[in-house]
Picture 1 (cartoon, rainbow, N blue to C red):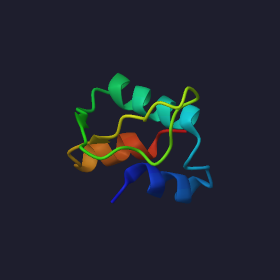
Picture 2: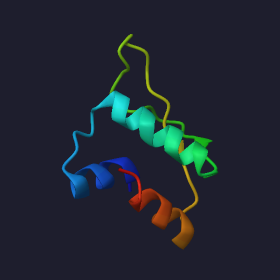
Picture 3: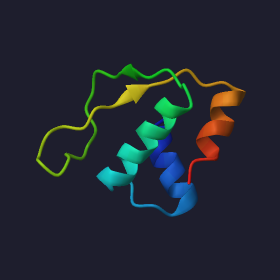
Length: 71
């Protein structure tokens, strides 16, 4: 399941908003969530037309709480 898409649906955000997605990835880094590069790309490109990095993360209760507190 794509965490970003679920988070966007729950909060009424536009899932293709690159700037907001980048903020989310930065937030995960700041909260020491380990991100592993995913083999597939994000369906959206950044402002310069480059593919956006996608990641996989290991989910546990602490990670879910951190993700849900992103605003």
